[in-house]
Picture: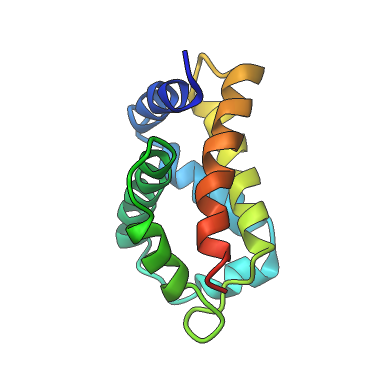
Length: 130
């Protein structure tokens, strides 16, 4: 099984867990005071829907879809917009991998490696807009 297929199956299992996105934000917000500050006035219900779609966009890009949506996300998160510094994406990915490990009952080292491969490819596109 290739990395993107492994990730799609894992993500399906995660999305079936009702607490997945809440767990992610609990971990992500706990990872840095700067991140907590960035989310102070955020509608978290809307944010969870954006996250759900954003992860899917990262996976679809790794599967060969154009980078249009990721470049747009990069622009909205760039220095002169939301000002999300590139190193914060590492905390994002760490929080996501931790959460996946909690919610995907089939999570293992190969699944972690597949997720990392898929995420890094798309995150690099987003970071490039900073």
